[in-house]
Length: 276
Image 1 (tube, rainbow, N blue to C red):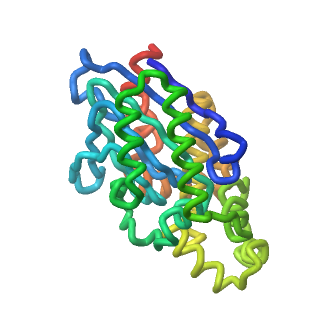
Image 2: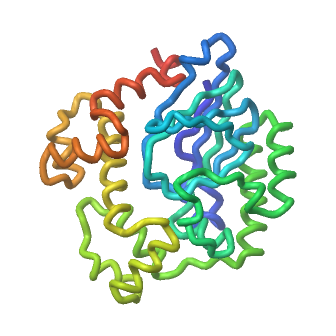
């Protein structure tokens, strides 16, 4: 297994990209039913690359399955999916800062994602198809990141992506340790509350309040994965929940199972086979 969980981007990209995630697993000897990883909603908007084996995406609620493209844009995920990895699973995730995908795609309203991933080649220029081909031919993982960064620098310059006060305001919500006043956040964006909510919907595909719930859920879930010994009650309070019942409600909505069940399912994910 090769993994780079938090690669820092080139300085010229740090205003637009928070980090990269890379995972490469050789799973030829692992049965297909054991190559599944649960993916509940998180607070990221990302560009994913799958340069090797094809990945199958299955919605947890409907069991609808679809084959993923070689590269996909994922807006603000709101429901859980399960990924089935291929025999030679390589994933490269570009985690954008809030608002960047909206500008990168010509200010396309994020509501048009309809809570599903979109084939990145359909939404981008011919350079992305060439990038996918070069990634498939490359063995060095850091060289892959370099190829992706070269493409992003060209694309960002062409799209004239700017960092605006509203982007910074959304990051305040994402990084907050407790719920923030909508009026205060809107003021940081130099907008009225109504203007901010309308702009937020265009850029994130949902309301600020709903996004705040996803952010809080994501922190609770990841804190439990990082610190399995922590009781759920402690996690609830550390992540800004009023009580344990509110945490349970969010897990039932976003993970679509109980908190303990999603942690158990994650422990059976393919990458964890190599940590035992």
